[in-house]
View 1 (cartoon, protein in one colour):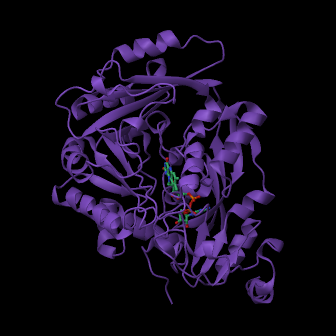
View 2 (view 1 turned 30 degrees about the vertical axis):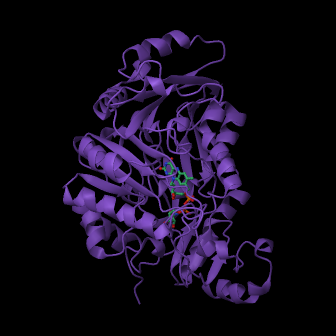
View 3 (view 1 turned 135 degrees about the horizontal axis):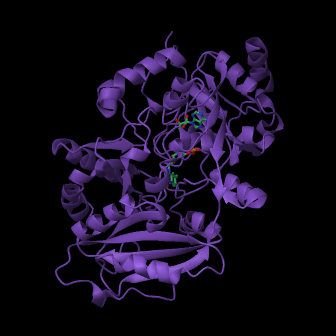
Length: 493
Ligand code: FAD
């Protein structure tokens, strides 16, 4: 098979990449990604249509990067002089399938399926949906399961890596495995949050739950960080009918700056932000808690919502809400994408920084980072919201803080390319300054979607889990072929 595919690669190099699933391509997008910061030249791009194609590609002996939708920002799904596996092609030949086990519904999906595609299929087929999401859905199942998959549902259901029942994986020796919590469990947990290091996920079994028709989507504003965190933490501790269905939040600039300021808060263009309500003496930034209640058409959600809001200490008069179909809520970032494409900031570089910061350190982080370093905003959302560690399975490969509650901090920079926007080097430098601030102040923190270059940094990132990570690499990808763009291990030989 190896010789066959090798011949195919050379033989087909002049044919159209879309005409054959295993043809290489000179499409430059496979040497780049959403971040637009790292550019490489793969030797070939292969479009697998089965796990056998994935095994054959691995058998070539070159570095192999599975690429989902290429929405990494630091070259993680690239393979300089290696093979890029375009995992999207798998979804073209394998549509989702319904599995019912012990009365529970699951979707068996190819790893190259976008979450937006899974949502559309599950609603249409069953009026059901996966419980755990990311904010943006044009990411592949395999891409987010290799990282974490975090959003406002995480406090309740755990990240996406806590919501998988089974996977089909091709390991670094080219062997195909079907693994789950009861079957090849070590491989299953290694791959979840494993940064593509231990195997190529080709299929995943995702649980489905009945979907609501509508959501009440609410934003409320806080002047003081301690009031914001106290309410947000109490909300993520709630369970059952006492809990919201989604809890997130963000920091915005205490000014009428059109991008970073008050205008980023209202949920509809018909309602403005009444700046006279901002408490006097507020600092350079304010905080917005964002919550959602699911409901069925015709159900009275108003009473429940106002009762739940009445217990919160937000600034009265600075509350905003809209009722929207569930699908419109889940696909909300798609609309932001359309706007960003129009103003040119979607195609520009995206030096994003994502961190998990322990709740014990988040007030100091606010003081040093949000109120000082980022007090003028970042031309994009600055998310900060708590999640509960008990919903994260310690057997998975992801590194998170030790604290029972920790915050996702996401600095999602959307500036236009220089000279219209800020210089990308300056933004990268600012990110480094923030990471250094976390280090020098001894915070319990981890980078999410990490990007380090030295072994020392990776060892520090994984901490006590580093020896386990190395052992897993030895077991499942001994030649260190997989996902070279993560820059954790170097291919042997
Ligand atoms: P890629 O970038 O293509 O790949 C990511 C990594 O996974 C690479 O190392 C790759 O080799 C590996 N990989 C890909 N597919 C497979 C596979 N099948 N098997 C094994 N390894 C594989 N993240 C969140 O958690 N929450 C959010 O709300 C969120 N919002 C985002 C919004 C936008 C606009 C963007 C650009 C990113 C967002 N992310 C979010 C980050 C996103 O989850 C990661 O960047 C994710 O990796 C992107 O998925 P992808 O399919 O594009 O993966």
